Length: 404
Image (cartoon, rainbow, N blue to C red; front, side, top):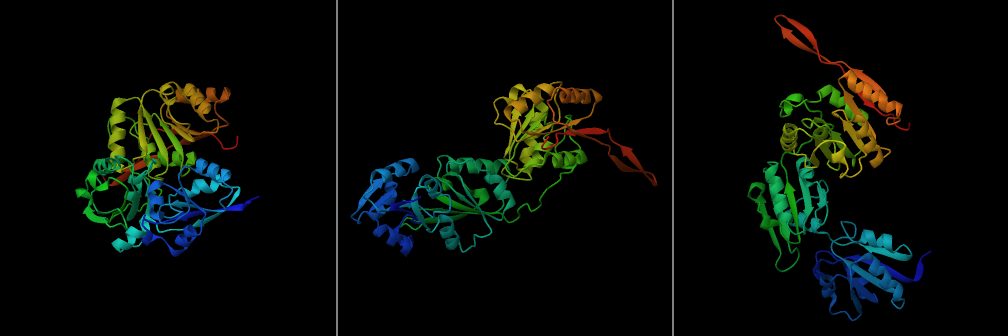
């Protein structure tokens, strides 16, 4: 049931000047009894003679509205557009007892796209303002990526990651103080980008002329940097990932990650995943780091240490792959189940000794009626005029059945 005595308008006011406000937005503000917003936004309406409250926190805004029933039409002014990384989203949830109307505005992305004479319907749109965002994946996969900036140190962080992952092809269009008298729009090659170019309240359009367009990418073994650390074979990796049933925003543990093949291939399937590659071997840790850099998977976090102890500090997993347990399989399973009883677990076993541990875990209730596959792979090799098949060691793939 709405509070019918008061109506709240959430008004997108565009870039921050009256010139970029829509006529509808200006009309709503002028005919309101009260205006609420951040100080710099209220300054636009200094000539309007109505009550103004400097506030941006949703709970405080609601409290103020509740305590001032005399104001029947209330305008909450918000920068940009109400549907694009706006405080309007939280306010709508906070003001469920009130009639709320959203008035759209011109976003900085729309404005910069127009100034640069490019379309934005085929671009990836992200905000780095106070958010943990995998912008590296977005830039690698898209021809156009818009980034909303504003967080202190954001410029240095972006330039460091672009340099680390070797992303240097393409251009950056940087817009600052958009629509104001001191508006500045600069275009630079990515390789010439500097941290100071991206500081402050800015929006940047990054154009990548050759984005990665492959999906569900399966990596060949020779694509990885190798060492003396064991590697999950390509065919085994493919089946294991299928059994994991990863979701777009999964939290994946790769326990005993080795060279990082599972973690990295999973990361290439979705930039929204959070992936922890857990490895105790120092050579393995370095190989994971090199491979993650090679494939530009910024969401893979390397955790050096022995499971299960090292897992305690990590967020709960939705999925876990166990490629090596060093004799701690049952302890690892107990830790995973304690962190999330519904975690989806897949593991590979090469020895009968590890399979004995698996069956003990089943008997103790640590695994729910697992499906056990044995994979035998043979590859052809040319010997003189003939082609002969050479078999690899058979591998067991153990996965819990969903719903059991």
